[in-house]
Image (cartoon, rainbow, N blue to C red; front, side):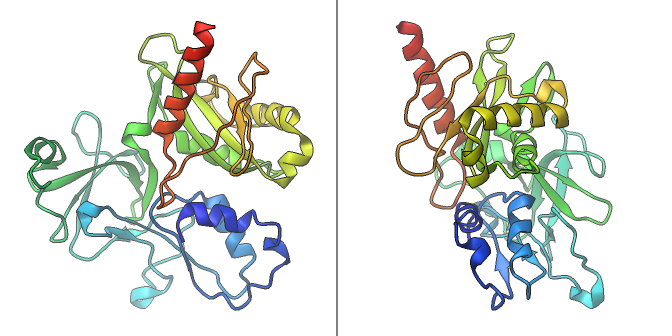
Length: 296
């Protein structure tokens, strides 16, 4: 299933009451799935101990990196938590820094791919082809790191990475911390940049959060305060959510909380049919709201 379906699955009120002993294989694709979600699934599927994932694009004709089943090829592959997987046979990869140099092991950079399954370019769009295809390599626009055993770990979309006070900030890293709260206050979250930094082009991290049942019992304001304390304790100061925390709901009438404001308007976390969070829509909605408030 795609990530948005897994979110609904683990947060369904009957999830912990249902017998999933007949489930022996699970897979997620189309977008990044936080480890906290896959761990919940594994905890409640007693006859399954492996969560399959992978990475691909239309340009790679579906797949490029796959998380192999443990024990494949005479035990060569291991069950490595958090990994997206290893390269498919016949493919090559590079992890590239912003300056075009090769990144080291466990250093985050842009993933470049080469292989017989990579398309040759974009139809009738030479500008896009020149931008994304460099000497046979496809620039994916996604940030990864790779460990010495050649396991790939997704970091974030390059276009979603924020630069705060001169340092790179990964929205997915912040989302992962919020989902990891020990009281499980969050069932879904998206982090994106909003205006308000020291310069006109600096965007501040802002979180749109769907509360879990535990979070709803705590109440919006108390849950927000607890998540503020939690993420500030577990993240460097430049990664703090200085753009605010907004409480939303996935269905029905919903509201948000703006720092220093009690105004409430409907809002959701928009997602594509494949489960990708549409951060750009969240940013546009926020900019539209703040512009309207400024006029008032």
